Length: 236
Ligand code: G3P
Ligand code: MG
Image (cartoon, rainbow, N blue to C red; front, side, top):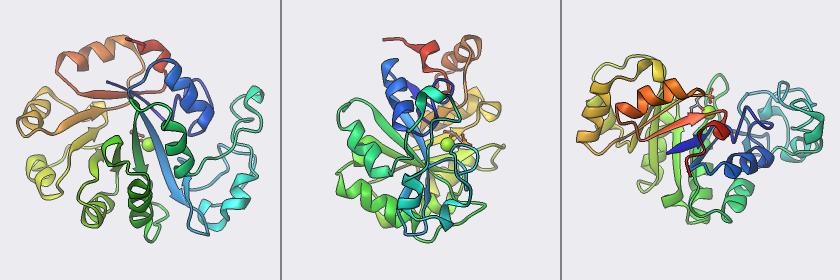
């Protein structure tokens, strides 16, 4: 399966609805977004802890209210043709994806360097409000957040993001009750794929933007891969 990273990061302004539309144009199976919390506790779709890189504003997401964030332009820096594109809330992404029931959502909780109190509760509540358990997976490099999510609502699927070789991965996966691992491809081997599949754990890697790398990982049996360029992998 193909996952559009931050929507279609290479083709449109990351983590915006425009980016998701672009990914869907090329028949992705999944879309990945990153989430942070605003000052007033809204779940904001943004990769960085600050709005500086991707919008025309400045400051930490945690110091801005959701209405201040809504005034920002999240498109113009990528390309003026995306001027006026807004920063979405998690609810808006789910509302948008309702039109595409076959496209699932990978919600990456960004915890660190800023740690957001109760971000897990907020994400779980939204998944529950939209009855979205079967269409979402929550991933994070903050493995404590994944543990917390599972404790809040054991029906939510979770995926372990990592960029290293992990010791005792099988045991770790079992203890955290994970559904999937999300290693950066550098750290993914055929042995890991085999041992995960033995226990019904999905293997979702990233970022694969070229066909030769894709072929290498397809041949070892990964379940999905994230790409910034879903146009290069339109298999449908
Ligand atoms: O899905 C994997 C990927 O999103 C993790 O890295 O920094 O792009 O959020 P990052
Ligand atoms: Mg991410």
